[in-house]
Image: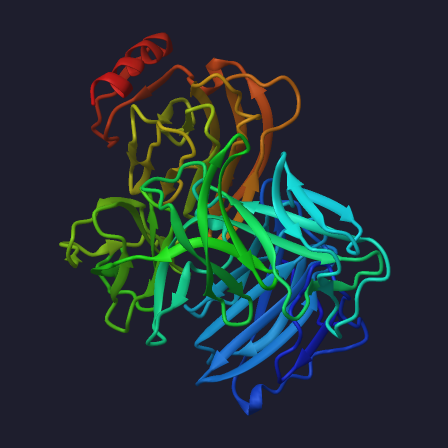
Length: 555
């Protein structure tokens, strides 16, 4: 990743104003003069990109707040033409909150607690931009839903002044049931004791107000507004009344303020409540938790400290995070009696993604999580999509020999491939809309091309209309892909991993619509490859016929 000069930065040892709704940018003549109070420093690289396409976002306002031994330092800056910004922060920071705000995108934030020195902000495009006269009462809509109801003369600038003319509201609907990573922060709120606790979300909305000159506005003193948060499209166990939380971009925690009531009418299902200021508002609640304990080790059995542990709800919308201690041990929270995904990552490698069914009490894993730490590149690919099509499938194709004469096909019917000491897994296969489907690649056994494609297995809509999204993380760098233009087929050729003779790996975009033979080539496969393996040749037409029965009726 190219690192930029610090010519676009503003830095202060005290808290600065937040990145509000496309407000004024940084002074390009300022440079980094942060001394970190004499402490050791480190360079943090921030990258801002479009959530769906991965396009770099220049001009994104970045706010970084670090906590060091109870003290807070705040820095800000603007991304360059490559969507990048570098800031000097303390190497001893306990917690770093990185927030971004770009024109035509919703506000977003990530939290760093594991010492990482790079963060990628995948910004969601706004759903609606509404220009209105603030001197009159206004209803601000997204797809026929009145998301915000404002009284006349209710918004002011930071000095309490009313707008001189029209104001534009940018509204972003966040559906965490499609992808929990759409939500700012770490799904954490502080309880009455000041301890961080995970929250479950049923939907959120972000609203910002600006005039033509870039001035930001919010509700004035003693003013309120009504908001309506669309219910997450894949939510379950839906409460009729729920607390409202707003996101504090300086602390990175969600703060409870008010309640909302579930409304079901011709405009859909949504939570309606009253707020006294605008930021990102979330309909969610603190839930009872259990602790999942375990350890993390590398492929040789050595314990790994400072690895990041994550649980992600499958049967609920939420995440929780932890870090391994010096002995490689961890304890991470999850919702009881639920289906979850468990992963571990570190700069040295990544683990498989494990699907667990939690009980009603704390649990200890019987075996350590193994990070695939190799001298060659490793990768994880995540596929997500919408409600329709109901089932999109991962298709991963690569060489089975040095000559490249044979190929393997990793898919739901052959979800594990081992070649020499390289392991490839389809860890998660979803058949009921949204995903995720997660593919883990420990290393690439031979030079050549390894192709990743998406196949529309079931549903009346198309891959492009879903919309589908593919995220690939190769050696801790992440790229995202969206379907190409043109007439969609059932097979989307997404990208190739290109492995050179020295083991170097690059990602090459393919981005084309292909016929079924691309996604289901004639291949040889078995459930375990070895030098003494006995391969079985499977005809593609038989795969398609047999797997329909196996996938949906054999379970």
